[in-house]
Length: 161
Image (cartoon, rainbow, N blue to C red; front, top):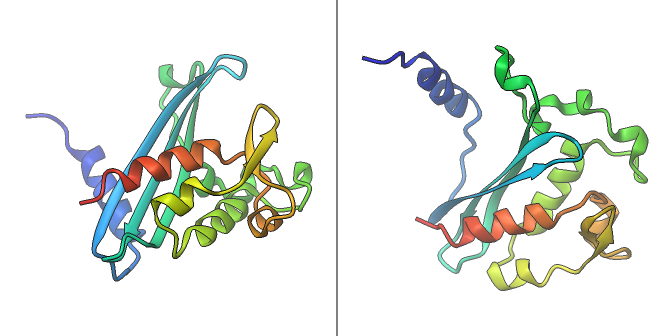
């Protein structure tokens, strides 16, 4: 008896963005945090697919940010990946890469890793979070904080079906 239009739109969006992957298991990790300073709710998501040995063969990382006051209006919330260049962090990036490009570098670095190897990714303090340790291959393509990424990927690997 309820309106299912939004559910149908979500399923269509999922189908439109489907990627063919040979995998044995898939997991979804989620992490929500409230940023009181920025007055926003961050929802971090990680979709991970693994082979029979538990090695990552595909991953997709994204973040939706809902700012204070948005819920009172009919505003479509786009994730950071959906915003692409509109997220506008390239000029602040030491490697001149936009958020979605750095997230893609993180995703690529996960390929072939298992849970223990993900947990072993070297990080260092950066702007109140953790970033890939300078001098590592990952830091060459991803200088943004990755502590939430790591937590959601670990959650996804613990949720494999």
